[in-house]
Image (cartoon, rainbow, N blue to C red; front, top):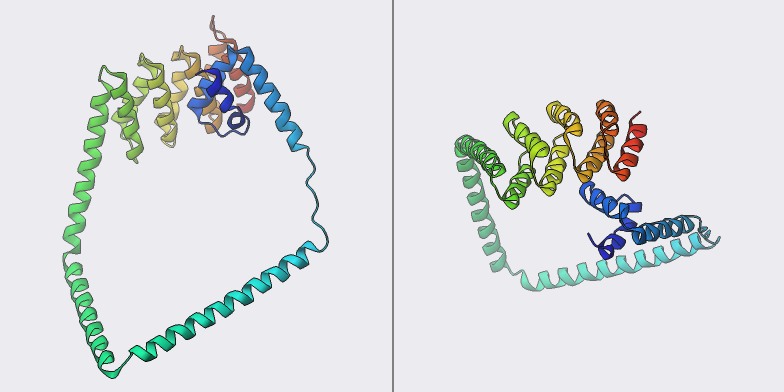
Length: 271
């Protein structure tokens, strides 16, 4: 990330409108860039000053004028609707001759007969179609999971990223997929792949095994970006079991200063 991109996201950072991955990348950049740190502080001060700007109170006659204007608009719209209906009725009277009425009635009868016949035929075949659709849906889900597992073993980081993206189409990941994602989070050589995998696992956090795996993953991470992103995820999930591994991480030598501050704040938020 360069300074131009970082400065363009400062407002989103202050208003909590950035994703976990974007926040981690942005905060890592701020750690090593004094200019962007100064820009962030100036933006934060401006943000605070804007919050203190008094909101002008509406005058006493605003409500009366608003309702008067609203009433005039409603009256005008009602007049337009009445004129429109009168115009339609006049046209129908000119067009609706006895011969045309018979043709319209005959056409409507044919349409109703066709609809009734189609409904009856579809009702007879519905159970068969439902079984076929259910079987096909199961096959598609199994195929997606097979492709996901295969791509996670690919040597290309791009293909592994594609594999993680497939989790968005999987409503309920099975145990094998969860284990593969956790293994990728803990062992993948590419930091971007690990960050995207963390986001995918956070979406599956309703699964107790996913939560437990995320907690165990904390002490296995050596990237400041992933450590910071994990801290955000644990606070978002309010996973109090993460406090102990975070404290273990703080005792490790060489931990990034920014990450250290981040983890200390996360521990406070969780306790």
